[in-house]
Image (cartoon, rainbow over all chains, first blue to last red; front, side, top):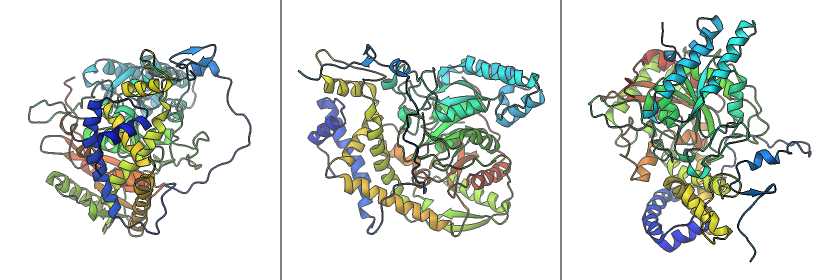
Length: 95
Length: 494
């Protein structure tokens, strides 16, 4: 699989990572090489094989539908890059 | 008087219990050594006050005639992937610069509950992505080991738990936590001549451990010998209702169960691990390991794990896919770095923050993960990789019909020099060729030092066990340890 710079930019945009044209030029052959290497998986016959969902059998536990945590707003806000009045703030979303 | 920093976990625990020395003396000795070892860059944060507080508690408990906790008086190093309440935790990434968790990870809390103290937070590959500790945002960790050729080239301590391996090998702490996603405990342990075990997936809670690839991540101990690993793992493991994949099982008494008598045990040698271009010294050490285990009473059998060669490519789909999803949370809104260019909107803020905050390797893996999960490619890459994972797990299942544990080399080479492999991602990924298959199958596996290569650098042997059979793995490790008599240690130059 050969990845071109257009694809690199699209993937970067999906991943929400800003990249320059130079970055895209550099990443295209690098990602092509890695993807080319992992494509050898295509030669494995997996017909009738289920994809793995858990490495060891383990069933999901259920618990009562009650509140078990909370009331720690201030502790959770201490790392906020910008917070006002107990809210996380971000740039204006609606013009 | 003996240098207290030469003692391992068991010796410290027993010595404090017996009153041979005080826990405070031990903590003082280690904190002094940590503060003088800056050249190794193993610690990101030093927390002598934490180690001292735990030591004082241990001494007070002894003075009061109380029963001492399992790790009373033992100071350890904590990989920076574990969130520690009130102590900066960054996963060695700028995007978490200055992040101070208001909570404690389950594994670290378990260790404090067992009486251990913390010497500091250990450097690592950024978000645990790397095999040489060269992806840290806070500089390379330098291995305490040097080649015997006098070149003094700075060597990689392995990765991602490179701060942990360097610190234990340099006697800056008797034990340290590590995490292993594809070999991040075992490969650095092998590179630095120490022991380390990755338990069965689900033994150690992942709660509060910064996530890389959730279906693979497991915590484990790194220490100087097998017994110390058993003691420390007992304290770290255990059911945790806060982790949905935590196993609801009692923690076995691994230390009590240790036995190097392998009579009646069968050790499998997987023929597919004889890879091309394997250095003759590693081949020879592997044969030596086989002879040691036979000497311990085990029967040696050849086994086949036919899908071995597909483990690494499958891993480099599954791990980046999970990482791209896990790392979506770093958006500059709730914690960590925010980069807000002039006039930028929300989307631009996300993109600028993530471009600035993540290192090159982390971005590379997020991009691969995003690509393989994107519309149109999901089945060809991700679903196919998960099917191959099923086949790899099945290979191991079949092998267990004819053997109890597997013996392999831990890594395909001794420690390489910093910078030697960093230009070629795939060459770096190939370091994990022997450790990744057991990670994909969730099996317990450990590395123990076997000997030195011609350059005087440590080489490790890996033991892989059945699901939940940490005891079998530790016992085979102990049998090797007793016969290898590995006593080499790096000469202090730092």
